[in-house]
Length: 386
Picture: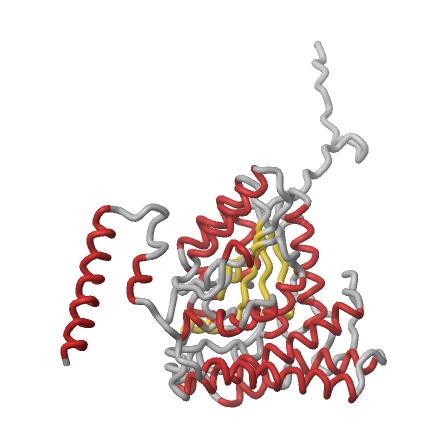
């Protein structure tokens, strides 16, 4: 009887087993919880992030205080009829100022309608910032000079603009970074997808900064997405992302500084979600009591970013009563100057309506301009006869 030998299969030894391939998504995922470096009382928390320099944090405090006073004055001007509308950013000062401080003057900012505080923090004349909201002109400052795009009212269109400019700058060999401010509602728009996807594919040096203030006007975040957080949207595009406590000024500046450095190093875009809260209504035309209650607002009032940073700087011995009073006085003077200049009626030329529509006016635009000019001349003649 012949015996047939059979090979005995044995499990490979541990040394011969195929190594588990690395998860490509691991490097893209944000922290499971928002990054925080200070608790609401201003007490430092353990962290692996490099803390911004003390001088930078003192400057951040100064700009936040001045920015909040500007915001309050702008709200008052709206009630006085000096502005057509004003979207307050009270409570979001850490995000507004932190983004500006993380950038160079030569980097580009793409703001939404709510970034007035960020723009004045960047050194833009507050009257020029409020020109759009006053209804005088599409943009009161020169975007090319300020490296700041006009404030964007349509949701998310600035994402595409930021991605395109960043790609163009990199293509020409410049190390410019673009930062696009985005509200949580904008992440539900197609332009958000297009901007982030384009930037990811072409490694455009742009930071997409989502200020998640919990409401898209009156629509809560839970009705916009089922994702654990908006930062998780980055993995679908191959974009690294992080989420941060948007009312922790130290953490916001640290995370954005890292994101900007990532983009500037040629590694492509970065997505940052800041968890914050809009303390005031969406605009002066909104009644926020229809969709949120006072108890919710009070919870966030206790997380005030200015109070948090002031407590931290005082505890470190780099801020005292005299310095706090000096910053408050500067903020009052800033608001008084704005108030005075906003009471001056602007001189508006109706024919300027046709300026900057196209680089070269079309025949139709020239014809329309001539029609308006003729009507104005005829009206002036009639008034002269009377």
